[in-house]
Length: 466
Image 1 (spheres, rainbow, N blue to C red):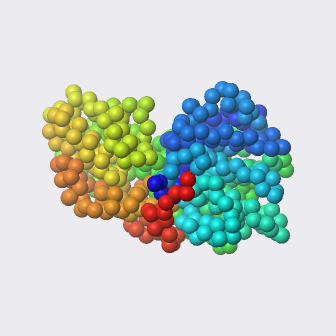
Image 2 (cartoon, rainbow, N blue to C red):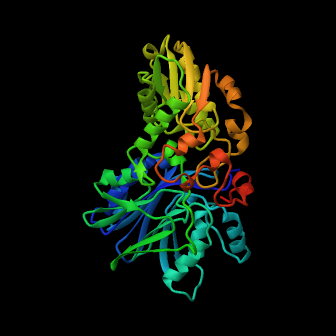
Image 3 (cartoon, helix red, strand yellow):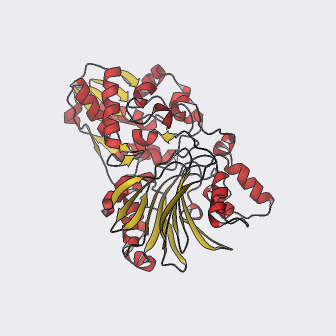
């Protein structure tokens, strides 16, 4: 039985453009790294909402005929990865519902840490849920009867939520972007031919030719309608930002701006700091592609050790970390990477990777290098050991599955059959980004959760209702 569904996802939306549907398709395509299980799009011309969702990749789901059937000047899109729950069409987004005020669609990136409590309240009053995703709770809040005005009701609903949520909301007359008060998940806005665009990462703006303008502020609601653009803040009081530092370490594309700075530059800085903290005599620096490339380049620059590409990546295999099952992750290790024997044979190698989560893929990669004749293998990781679960939207599972929660660094080294292993320090990680250090969430490293998590058991144990 699957556990409760929660997502790490990508969002894209555009308001008032004649090619909105095709631009959204390409925007979703550029965000495919954020979710490979399902994708969906919802569009409008001002009367009703049209939607199409499917399981699989964007290019598989949205054929030419499907895109033509969705053609409208306003669209939002969503790519999904279920971090702990069922991968089913019921949980694919955008979610689309009809209620007293009319049709409404919502696309959500993040996790709500009070979802179990809110869901029980609704179910006790007779509400029926169609999915097992926490995103549906937002729909139920918005559908509550209210004497207050539309803005006040939206503010009331958003104030009930705890945790991480970047949202795109679509009605026949409005497109709305929302970011939680701590700004856990990225969300930015741009403009294309005068039409506003919103996306999880700026690389999606680039691919459609939109100009990057700014990030949606933590706690901000931005609305676009026939009356133009307006924005307001919904929290009762300002919160200190808690940007997910793992976006910079691993998840975001290096050509994106995230939390106001270049992902590529940050990863280069991580590698440079890693070389200063953990030098080792070696012949070559070898990156684990693709998310280790920039950190390896930084390590090479700082250490003066030449960098070579010792692995070749099969780009037709999905990201191993975000495969939905452990079996798929194991089977994907050998398919994803192959070693160039001529490069590594007889060499002392510094292998730079972004992280070690469960240890399965790292162990397989070291085995490939040994079989190819590497003389020494020194692994360097561009973040601290991940020893704590994430409850804000990344698939860091039960602590028993996290290798750093069960083993010391030395034990991990022996488990992976390495000559040496070293991780970047937490201070080194935070010194490589430009925002104040307390503006980042580091819970997966430190165990310090910015938003109190009182429903840990629901992430680990609650069964899906799908």
